Image (cartoon, rainbow, N blue to C red; front, side, top):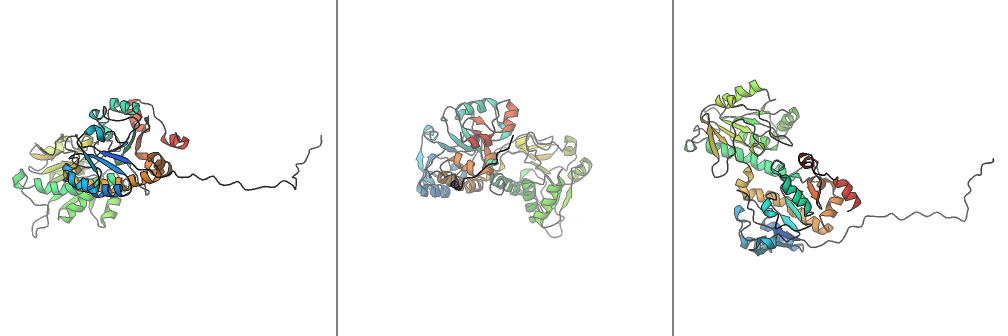
Length: 404
């Protein structure tokens, strides 16, 4: 059987096919709602008046509940002059297609939320409840966790800013409670000629630990930093541009340093779940009377065995003659600065959402933002929440690719 060779006709012409490009949709105006937070001691607001004026100048509408900005010392008049519409009806704000909040959604929000709404707010993984998540899924909500927003450099800008505020605030708080008037030991953090500097132990070398170290050194304190990750300790040294005393978390060394320090800061966290307890009650009992523990990991259980949740109104508890400052959400105590930091990220993001025609479009074109999405049109796209509550997980990348 003879094989037939393929032949190409000279009359047949080949042409290159046109490249099919993804045509971006037209920009569309957004209607953004900012409710007044009812969460305990949540004083921040997601958009400051200057940010609202930029959004309004870009053709968007901002509907705001009266007095939503009072915790950050912004008045209704500030927002009204920026172009926001002030309303007294919370339900009217919750009818906006996009909600911007600085506290996670709670059960009280559920009756007010609309079908297919977009919520931009914190998530607080440790406080998430299954019933709430199920009802958000039923309402086909799309939810973006602000602490998980990544920029194009794969950093977490809001999480970092809140860490910077917390780390900077820690030493201000320590200085305040070391005074005689707050039952402290009556010492300054340092910098006085001829007087030995105050000893500060910082457990955790991430952003909070770095800024706490930076501020303690600036005030003249003697600082010793512990972490269970050598790379973090190396990065801390490099970022500070100077050598500081560092150690891995070895219990005997840690106990020895705690025994002679005036300030101990707990800033060690796990990515998920409870913070590790690295300081036992026995170690705390051996600390000097009048010294202070500031446990900034308290929102995830705390690093000190003796830590118990306190609040901004009653921030201190005393155990073994040692002051414990265990207030969660420290940035809310510096709400105006924190609001400016959050707004610096959310305002440009919302402008982009409008320019690109919606949140679905921006996460289609900018993959780094997808990590912040934990609900997409009612589908649960966060694997950790899915595993925790045994709820169906959906891969966001597959949903985006199918453009559903």
